[in-house]
Amino acid sequence: MNWKIIALTGIPLAALLGFALPSASRAPTPAQVFKLASRHVVEIHTYKSDADIAGDLFLDQGSGVVIAPNVVASNCHVLIDREAATPYVFFDDAKYKASLREVDRTRDLCTLDVPKLPAQPAKIALQSDAEVGDVVYTLGSPAGRSLSFAQGIIAALREDAGTTYIQTTAAISSGSSGGGLFDARGNLLGITGWIDDGGENLNFAIPAELLGELPKRTT
Image (cartoon, rainbow, N blue to C red):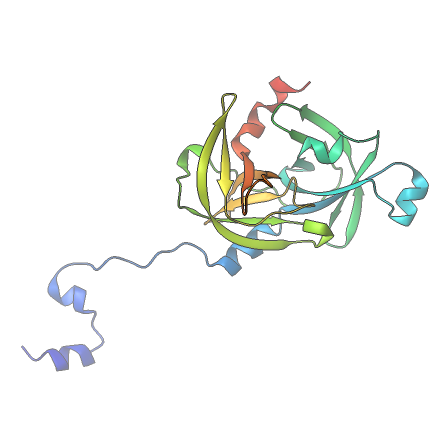
């Protein structure tokens, strides 16, 4: 058989030999994941008074993820652990007044009602499908820098008080709280929650699937 002639015909070698070679992964590129996930992530500011709102003198700043039409998930410590405040959501250069919807202080998960918010809801991934070593991405507003995107892996799955939390090497910092931890296909795997400053790159997220339990856990 003249292998050189076969190669020049443009016919795949695997077809000629009667078997299929493994196909290339169809997982999105990091750039594609960012483009998808950025449609779901918002920045959140909380304000004490109308005057502070006018001057954008916020009490706290964090991140959030749209999980249903006009509903944003975030951390409770962003929304309610300081003085009574009014939250506003920022998306696509516009500001939307929000109100507290559901509260689970134990897991630090809260949701907001945000009327007329045009952002699209994220598709929620199951934590049970996640494995140590999986590639993941964080997206939020660290230090107010909206839509900051970072890549890492799942470093561990840590159980505490009956809940399994996701430890990741994907970077988060102050202001990232309440943002999204996305899997390699752009699905929402977790809500970024906190950093263990006792070491380096110890970042944690709350599994997004636990948002489904919020109605019965609201306190």
